Image (tube, rainbow over all chains, first blue to last red; front, side):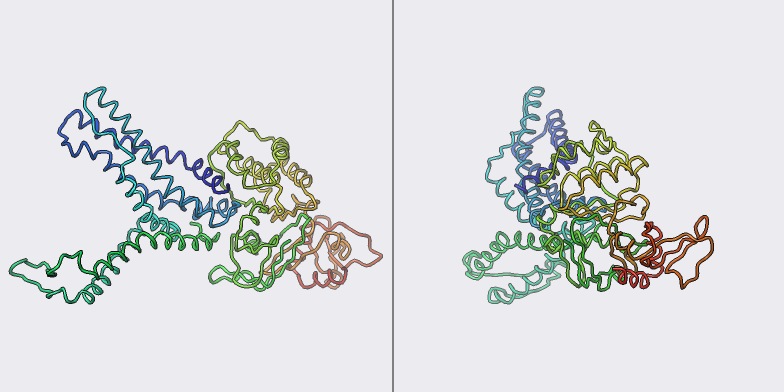
Length: 265
Length: 280
C-alpha cells in the first residue's frame, strides 16, 4: 500500500513536467507527419516504421534521461532532500517506487501514449490529406522485447542517478563507455587466448588496406557450431538478462540507504 | 525516548561532537539552545536519521536512526528552518502526505489552521514564508507523531502568530509526545520550553528542568557590580547588575530568564554544572 502512496506522490508532483514532455513528443510526431503528407515522398518502409522509430527513440533516450533525473529533485535537492529523507517510507520502498516509475510505468504509458497519438495524427492526416502512416500497433512482440531491453539498460542509468549527484546522465554515459572499453579489451584478450586455434594471425597490410588494422579470423566451421563460442554467447546473455539489472538495483539501494543531509547539492 | 551515547560526528576535517552523551526522556517540550555553529541543527539531523554518526550509539524511539525505517519515520515530524513546499493545492498536499502518518487527526489539523488563520483556497506557493511555516506546523502537530522537532519555529512569524504558536503548541502537548525546539529566540519560548538543553563546543553543557534551575540558582538585581566571588555570572543591565548565584535555603525562588541562564552557561559551564549538581 505504501508503494502506491509513494507512486501517487511521485506522479502528482511530477505531472506538470510529464505533461510538457508528452506535449513535446506529440509535436515531434505531428509536425514531420503532416509535412510529409503535404510534400509527399515517403516510401512504404517509412510509412510502416514511422511510429516504431519514435517509440524506440523515446523509450531509450527519453527513458534514460527521465531515469537520470530520478533522484535529482528529491534525494539530492538542496531544498527538497529533507522532505524525501523524512518521508515515512524505508529506503527500499523509496527506491522501488523509482524503479516502478521509470522502468515499468514509463514504457507502458509511452506505449499507450504513442498508440493514442498515432490514432489522432493519422486520423487528422486521413481527414485532410486522404493518406496516412501506419497506425502504431502496441501489441507487436518487437516493442515488448524493446521494453525488456530497456528495463535492463535503464537500471544502469538508475544506478548513475543514485551515485552521481550532478549531471548524472552525462556521467553515466561516460562511465558506461569507459567500462565497455575495458570489458571489450579484456574480452578481446580472452577470446584471443581461448579461441587461439581459430586465429591465423594479426597483420597490418598497408598495401592492401591502407592504415587500417585487419584482424583475420578464419574458421573452417560456421561460427555457431563452435562450442566455446556458444558457451560465451550463453554466458553473455545470462549476464545481461539476469545480473545487470539486479546488480544496478542493489548498488542503487546501498546508495539510497547511505545518503545523508550533507550530500544535497 | 532518545539516547545518544559517546557520539562522535565531524564534517570532513571539522570535529563537531566528540563523545557526546545525552538522554532525552519523553513527555516534555525541550528547548535546545546553543551559539551559532554549536551543532544544534546537526544534533537534530542525527536524531532524525539525516546524518550518520561516526562512532557511538544512537537510539531514537527504540530504533537506530541510521536505518531510517518507516516505523521510526512515521513517529517523527521535523520542521526545518528552511523548508520546501511543492507548488500544489493545500488539499492535494494532504492527500499525498497524510497516508504516511497513521496518527494524523484531520479535525485537529482544521483547528490548528483555523487558529493560525490560514486560507484554504490558496495554493501553497501563494502562501508567505510565515504562512507556509504555520501550515507545516499545523500538519506536524496534527500528525500526532511521538517526536516533533522544530528548528527555529518562530523565525518569520509575526508577533500575534508567535503567541498563537505558543498557545497551539502547548495545547497539542500530551504525555506521549516530545517536542524539541531549537531556537535563538529564547524570549519567544519563555514559559513554553522546559527542560533546557544547551550545547557548547560539541558538548551538552546543560540539561536541566527550569524547576531544577530555580531550586539551585537565584537571580538578583544589584545597583552596584557584585564581586566575582559572590556570583557565578553577572551582566550589566539597565538599572544595575544582574547576578546569578547559588540559591541558599533563605533565598526566595526567582524566575531565571532564559537569556541570562544561557549566557551564564556558555560563559562558565563548569561552574553552573557544579551548582546545578549541588542544588539537585
